[in-house]
Image (cartoon, helix red, strand yellow):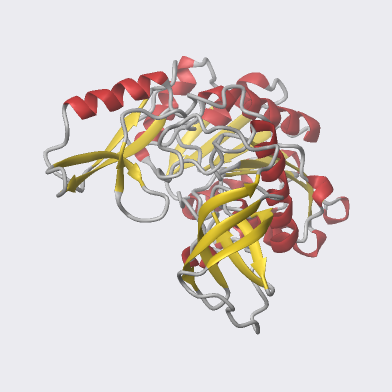
Length: 407
């Protein structure tokens, strides 16, 4: 996951409030400026402007007046380091974590939690409007995390040799460079993960440059060592509830669970939705497919099947298994989004409903724009979920319905 806005973020089509391309940078590295923060960009950084030129600065809040030092200047934007907050926002709170501001894991611990949800909603609305042309009215309020602290069930920590102390740093990457911050605990992970961090520190890796994945296993679900499962157990009831309501509202009887992982979404929806007669899960990870078969048996779900292979290969062969007019395709792809051939196939087959789950709003907006082109599908709603509290990241569930004129 990216920790801040970078040129790579721009190439990934994340919309940034950049300056006029004709404007010339009016600042240089080392300048100290006093500016007002006008916005909070997707990625977590505040937006300041001088002579219509944008300067991004972390750990600030819109409405604050700050002093910053310019640390990087590009043709279209600059980056600043926060020196002092001169006028403090009423939304500013004391960060809970002592590593906040150095560690790159969190961007929003200095912002009141309710305000975080407000800013995330605005960011998502801006992205879907600018990249997809979708109305803000289709974006529902962000579903809050019932446990905004100690929620994350999987992390990756790194080791790095520190010459100064002649020892290892064990922790996370700093927010502004590639160095590792030495940490003893993390405020957003499950207590069990903090115990695992302590164990790693007591039994350190043999050298720097190694990564260690720490995970708390979900109850009553088999998940392979390298297979995907949602990183926040506390949000899963809300997520499944939103999916179940969308499926019930559309009246579909059949599901295609594409990028199904260990079968979590398909199994949960099928077991809680009496109208679902049958479903099929597709996943490239063969180990995950084996787990999905075990999970279906554990949850007493017998009306589904799971097939190993890429979505591009398998879905065209299976799409005619169920009547398109009574079917829903659930997409939960990696952050890069769906393969273009999947978008083309969905537009050709015209299933009644498409539900797209994504943790990357920019790629989601891009894919939805293609699916909805020419009014073929209508975006019913987007439900954002705060799966990653105190960070820049947001999960979204998009509900698309085939237009009446397209049936």
